[in-house]
Each structure stands twice: as C-alpha cells, then as structure tokens.
Length: 120
Image 1 (cartoon, rainbow, N blue to C red):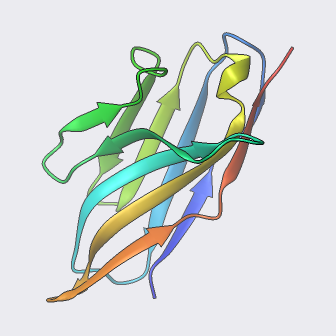
Image 2: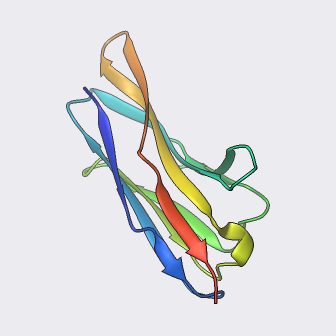
C-alpha cells in the first residue's frame, strides 16, 4: 500500500518562508507526476504546483516566482519551497503522487494534508 507522509507546515509571518516535504512510503515501480494542492476554508481545492517525471513543472499563477517545486527521485520525495508568503496562501496543503505499483497497476495517492497559516 502506498502512503504519503507530509511535513513542514506551520505558522509563519507574511513575507516568510516554509518548505513542505512529501515522502512516498511503500514499494512502487515508478512515479510519474508529483504535485501539491491546497484548499482554503470555503474554497475548492486548487493545484499549486506539479512536477513530472522528466522534470517539467507548472505552477498556479498566484504562486509563480514565489514557490518552487522539486523532487528527489532517489528518496521518492517531493518538496515545495514557499517564499514571500502572503495571508492568502493560508490553506491546507496536500501532496498527490501518480505512479505504478507493478506493470499495469497504477495508483494515485494523497497525503493527509498539512496546515499552512500566514499571519502576523
């Protein structure tokens, strides 16, 4: 069974930084896309950043230039470096990983979510 373990959330002042981590636990054959999503109270979940197996990335317009997504394939871990945080970045952040457990057996797993609060 594939599980994702997230860490790194917390309370930070506007303009501050946080780094989120999401590690894949369990045996997998391959991992394709890894991404971060967020959901603020009263709003629907939105894509924050995504990175494909070959390295191409895409970001929500609201975070471009401030957030950076990266992955360590040896550790099956994805990171989200968040700089110049704003109060509107406050949300529960969740990672999502797509891959294969065996040939022909794909998976899509979600992390448990980690709270990020940006407030003075």
